[in-house]
Length: 362
Ligand SMILES: [Fe+2]
Image 1: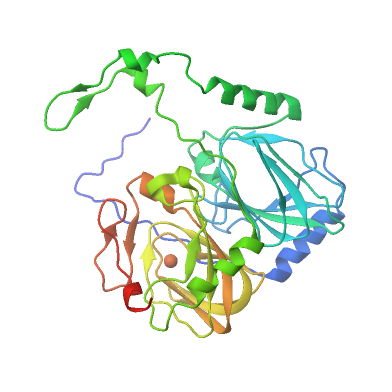
Image 2: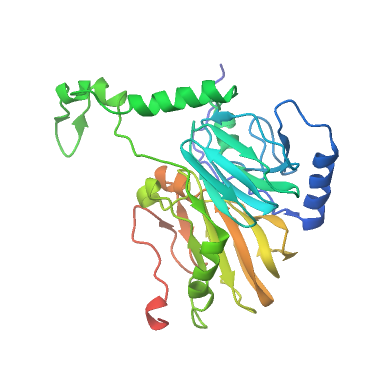
């Protein structure tokens, strides 16, 4: 134990990590290396893309977000696993199948899906090319808090445990908390018995699938918003289990942006960190004053938390998948945001947020 005297001091914001760009070519080289290696016993050919400033525990590309390149050769599959992390997956090459809890679906280029906590997860390559996925998870945060839990096991054991948990989730008669009333005291404060602490209300969460073949035609609506739009041309891949936190998982939203050519967004900042996978077109970004040029297939720590940044499309526009730990920040009441550097800092989720000029353009 030690005591740190902080009298007369006020905590300052910590410095943000610099942006980092991982090129399509670097990703392709790692995919080939993983594919050429002998098959691991658990089937998992995987590499974590780690920021040079990351420190264990909790290595990631952002302090709270890791990115894995996952490869399966034709006919291969992974051993079933589960963990208390949550993730967003996307397919960047090939074709395969996913089974996550009770949800099963085929996965193709640019499809996106969420992986809920503690669901059994299984992937197989059912195509004739390599199956390559990117997986973004909140494991670094859990590892930093030293509470990450994960296991691999026989499909039957993990799946049986999961289905038993689902079956047990139906209350048989009254719950203990029904007999343990919450007591209002004064000024809006309450006293809550232990029975509520160990039996909070639940929200059903399951793996949802956003197939690119269905999402792509919808993107015309955002790509086509008129010139001078002050918002960003994207859709969040919204999972209603995240409720007002507007997420894809309880930690991250995944959004897909579709930009026409030569659009320059305004510099802004937010405490949520963002990673972009640019999968169409090209453009440039300025992050904490540093200029970065990117093209389809590149991956980037595009917005380290609280770093001032903006993105601009090249002449042909771009498509981007963004992973941002926005729902986590809303849940913590820590999502501070400046939509332009002239705006006040707002605490989104507790205050009315920023208003775009959409009403003038539709
Ligand atoms: Fe941003």
